[in-house]
Length: 544
Picture 1: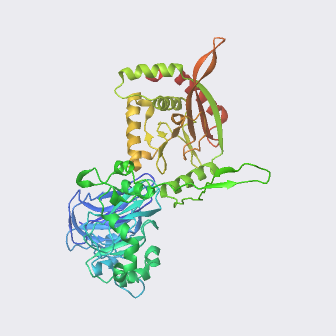
Picture 2 (picture 1 turned 90 degrees about the horizontal axis):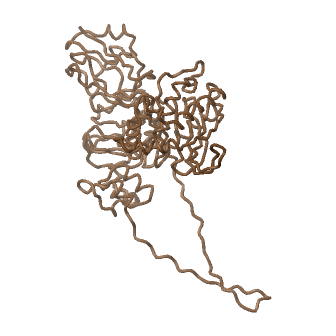
């Protein structure tokens, strides 16, 4: 008996999914556990496996089309079995007459009135801007690795895309010739906009591009109609010669990005990785030839009253500046922190911590710990324990309600080359200091290499931001929404303190608690800080 396949709910906040790619087409046999599609959710692009067996009788949404959760997207059953009643009964957006085979590696552009030409008809594959992170709305083409006319394979990374989180590779998922490129390197395209077309060499894709499609394809329609001529145009070749040669160099996406930012020609660098591939360290260690400094001219100035001439060196300066487009990470940071600062009423509470006992305890712990424990690890642990005693601080403002979190997921702010990432140490109150230390070190390596995944940075209930390691005495932070508070950690300073009525040397650390006044009151925040102070000044409590 035929069975319907519905759009699954793949995350707690998912309301709809986009069919990024079909891996089966109408008529194919499907076994339980087979990958039938890739679905873009609000968090990530995920594989959708079938839990049923049979022949794929019907495919509803096209690739790139958004479908609400629980909507019928396919039907499985016996070959030739009637299924139209299942679709109409389930309220699917499509009808039996609309059912049509969907190619496993192609996507149809939306037709204009009176036109029936599709990507499938032409035997080509339309490549769209993929959703590469949970907060991504658009991506910037950081680097094209191929040019129009090149032959590519299905597993080739045709471009590097800069998102708000990292620079990631976009795979072709099709064999053929690159027939069309929708935008230049450095240009942005919204998620699901057309960025390229792959197909058999010589295919005329003009009818497909003349159809009603997404705005990026429309914007470069005139250019696309003359793709073959443009590819051989001498002037264009001269302008793009360096880029074309550079794209042939074997290099990691991160190495390409760093080289681009620093204005370094990758063809001048020798790669140290396998098969001469250039990696990050090769770019960072590259030293270009130093140009000779211009000679300094001298000038003589004499006033009417002076007897002796005064010779002054003449200094000729040049006003220079560099402007760079705002990357996706910086755009997201700007948007989210602006929303937080101008939406949540912030107030700050400050306290000084006597760190003498913490310094002594850390030294003893590191004599036996399998992983070296930092002061920041001790602060994360102390914050998690204190939050258990003050759940009002471990809360979130949700508009019409306040969420009081019973778990302690501590976000750890980390500076990276292009901005800030906040990976999350989950259930930190129940983890040992060594466990927290190992986890934070792993996050730091992933963040630096831009390898963090959405599951690493989602779900914080409180955030710790530590600039003390950079010598900052004290500072205030903007709350990382939807958290209700954030702790700013300053440096440990050696200053005179009063103990037992005597002035003695001491080690003091300043903490600043930023609170959202909608969920955390002044007295509540003060009580939390007093508990935190007690834990850090008597760190033996953290080991209990």
